[in-house]
Image (cartoon, rainbow, N blue to C red; front, side, top):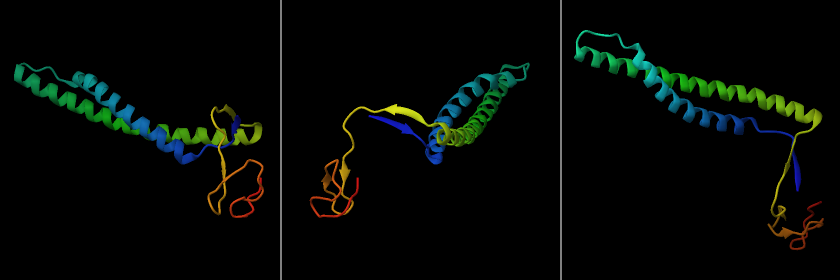
Length: 133
């Protein structure tokens, strides 16, 4: 069975990209922030001063990394909305992506009584309601 994807829902793409972006952005932000935050450490004369400065540098890097990860996720979600708009526009003009699905064809169900309808039924054999083709 071949189907053509003519339109993509804005909110479904937004929530998916935002969720993935938050997870990836925060994880990478924490890791990279901790690594680069150590570079903000001023070198001190005493070992204890260096330890305190190192902790502050890493904490600063992690905070910057988390904030950067959140901003990256939000910007990614907004940019994906622009892509969805452009896809929907182009799919309306030249056609959407063709997708071939395997498996059983979805069955038709009577909206009146819930009976499973034959493919060519115009009326429900159970309740007699008009269901069309």
